Every structure is written in structure tokens, then in C-alpha cells.
Image (cartoon, rainbow, N blue to C red; front, side):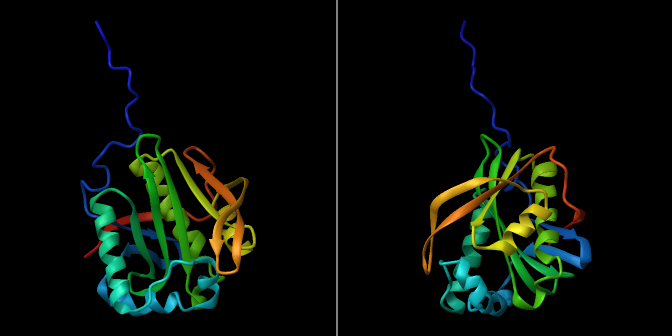
Length: 208
């Protein structure tokens, strides 16, 4: 008699696509919601900011391309490839972006990425959004490990990761290409059961 010895996935299929993409709320009146057509100007403006361009080499060129990205974001959710949120003030003004990508349901691992618009920097927006997404992904969806990487020259992102309980695990040498050449990348990770950072997710809603 044979037995099935395969290991079941950490995150069951359908854990995302089985319901609408949620709206997450956090400290400081932050609300993470899916992107919509009205966000196109703010999204395009973000990728014209020098600091964001410094760390993001894949950039939309015009309104049409931004809308194509938004369409791809919706498809990512439906196909359980990722989740993309606008970080907003109360659901309105866009302050930044955060995403869950590279989803590995078998091992329960995913990657996190984010940016914040210039006017919202230094106000805890990135760390608040990261705490909200982290809590949802680990505690509600059931991922075991979330990873976050950034250029070793990006000290602001390093502070956000550390503040949010993402431990620095090492350096990936020459791991990413930026406009000025290849960069070493810091790898941070947060595992279910790690001590949370000071900002926490405080609510969950549905996008209208």
C-alpha cells in the first residue's frame, strides 16, 4: 500500500483569489486599497520623483502605461501572483505604494516592496503600511516568511524594514541593476512569530 508523502502547501490555493482584494487600515489614518483609475496621475508622478527613480528602474512612461500596470495588478490578484495596494490617507490621497510579490504558496514565502511620495516621507507612512500588510499576510493569509530587499545604499528603506521587525539577514552581492550600475542588496525577513514592530494593523475592510 502506497501513501502520498507530498507536503501540503503552507498557503492553500484560493486563499487570495477566493475573495476580493481587501482594504487594510493602519495607524495614522492610513488605508491600503487597490489601485483605481483616479490614481493614475499620482502613480505617474511618483516615478518622476528622483528618489523613487533612483531605486526603481522599471518605470511607466505615460498614463496609458500606468493603466496597463493597474490592469496587470488586478490580474495578479485573480491569478494569485501578487497583491498591489495604494497607500492612502483615509482611502483618498495617495501617499505611496506597497506590494506583495513572488508568492510561493508551497513554502509560504513572499516578497514585499514599497515606495512613498516625497510629501509623505518622514511621517511613518512606509512603516505603518508595511506593518499592516505584514500582519495580514502572516496572520490572516498564513504566509510563514516575508522577504524584503533594498540597495545597501538605500538607508531609508533599511530603517523602515528594521523598524517593522524585518531582521537583516545578509547582503546579496551585485544582485540588482540600478541606473548607475549594479548594487549589493540587503536582505531582510520577517517570520511568523517574530516580535512585531511598533506599528500594527488595526482594521480590515472592503474596497468600495
